[in-house]
Image 1 (cartoon, rainbow, N blue to C red):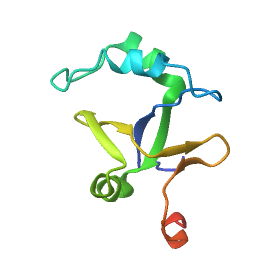
Image 2: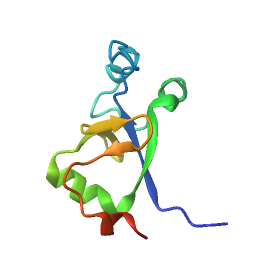
Image 3: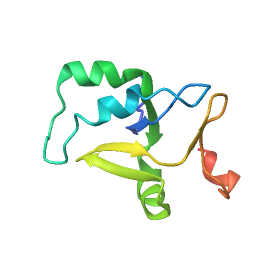
Image 4: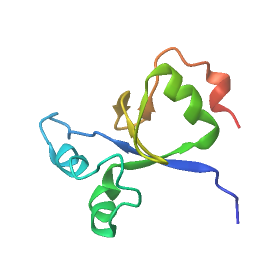
Length: 98
């Protein structure tokens, strides 16, 4: 097994037309003091969850790409591309190499 050091992040994906609001509706159920999220909500959010390397979280926070919804549960504020996934402008390609 490969040790995978990642953190789950919610992407506010609004579909190809940009009009879907399902993820916003689901996020409205999350309150900062909620602690652990209910299983039904996690299942509904699953299509909008991507994994980010934990070592990148602090940098993304400083750059304004993440919002903490509850402890250890994040929302992505940057762009999202259907092919490339999370996109961050002006990132050094060396940061992408492990």
